[in-house]
Length: 329
Ligand SMILES: [Zn+2]
Ligand SMILES: [Zn+2]
Image (cartoon, rainbow, N blue to C red; front, top):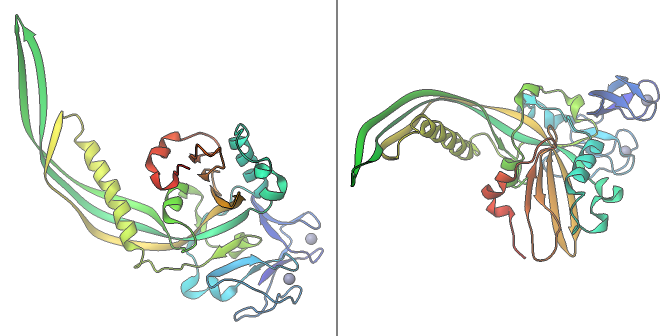
């Protein structure tokens, strides 16, 4: 299936800069007409008749011959129909600008690193995610110590007060994201977060037009462990914040019980720029909603750094959290 322009017959694509459907051939907004191809697995391009090649999990891509944005209908229907999605908010030009802005002062980068020719090879991918929701009951039992010292005359006094610390709370977690794509490295996808779910909308295939998309490679059950771990880490952080203020704390018991959980299938936007230099690949992943960039930059041989930032603010602190992305040459 693809979207054909009612005015000129060209391919209408979703344009993030214009926040809508747009025909790049005759500059018309909202002129799309849904044009069905083969209802089953598509073999030939419904626009030009060229033979199509695509991967096992592909659900949207561009024809190699006529560049039409094609959508494989059986792969977005029934059990494969996403419930929600965040449409791309950043188009290719905005992404190019964000990368150039970030790396313009990088004196060690090769000359063609930010060239149009290389950057035009970027692809916008809707990555399949499961969004988990949990209703939990969390409790903590332990002992907290507060230490007070003072000096009187020539004597220093220390007073240690011991408190029983007990916390019990119901915590609701909404939309904990876990990607369901083999092609996307898990550690990188965790770094591409956060996504702002206020822009999450009901799935509409129009947003896929002109972009690549995959359907989920793993079921929600198969990804459940990763989601549980993320949820538990957040729960423990919330508990910890609730008993801050003691000099030290010992834990007697801590439980995070899941009372209810469910998951939703969603597509989230990620740009991918593959740069290779001296036989080494430097993949960059850019959050298609806020421009946060994750990837290793090509630098001098003595240094390699991991970058993680947003288009609007830099977050160097994340470096400490990504040992896997840091390599020393
Ligand atoms: Zn047109
Ligand atoms: Zn074609």
